[in-house]
Amino acid sequence: MRSIRIYVSPLEFDRSLISNDRSIHRMINVLRLKAKDTFIAFDGKGQEFQAEIVKVEKKAISVHFTPKSTSEQPPVLNIHLVQALAKVDKMDYIIQKATELGVNQITPIITDHVEIKLNESRKITKLHHWQQIIISACEQCGRNHLPIMNPIDEFYRVVSKAPKPIFLLHPQGENSLPKIHLNSQDITLLIGPEGGFSENELAYCLKQNITDIKMGTRVLRTETAGIAAISAIQTLWGDFR
Image 1: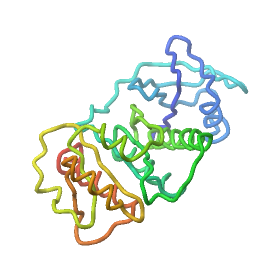
Image 2 (image 1 turned 135 degrees about the horizontal axis):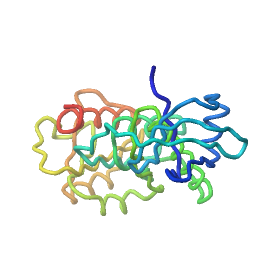
Image 3 (image 1 turned 30 degrees about the vertical axis):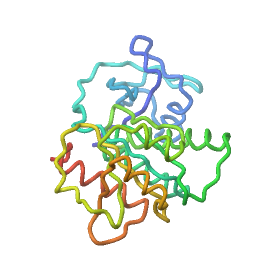
């Protein structure tokens, strides 16, 4: 039987008490856990404990923690996904799958062809929503470290500061991943919106010596492109090997 995993933050081993609203809701209302049930608690920063419920109350759950050795290996690659904003369901899917596939950092960006307009309040709400998607994905896939979810930012600012190498996915790209000689553990992956990057954005990337990548002969949707590229990168150089 597959172990139940619960994200608990802060995870206080000595206190043996869970008071986080999200954790309590998931344990009581979703999973219907009760006294003597067991689960794995992790804090998103690498700590993981075997836990047994001692007592269930409305606003707190008493547990008994036992240290559990983790089988999670440190990542071979540090992948930073820089993703142009997509519609709600597509963006949720991208963040969920990127987390499952092992990215270390996600930054949503505004590009010339992004049609989604968000005020500051909506940006904060989106960020919180995406963080919950990341937590759920880590609970499911067995990750003990949450990837960093960065605030929505502007294309030029992010690209100018991102560490090299930067791989830009483009249908007319001149390079393919298998032909690239990778000499770094850090990879920035740049994915455009449905309409693609603008001519000005592509020209800027060219000046920055960013490597354009073509993923086969087909034009991939924005919610497919990043996931396909991450999978290929993990297969060629990462922890899929």
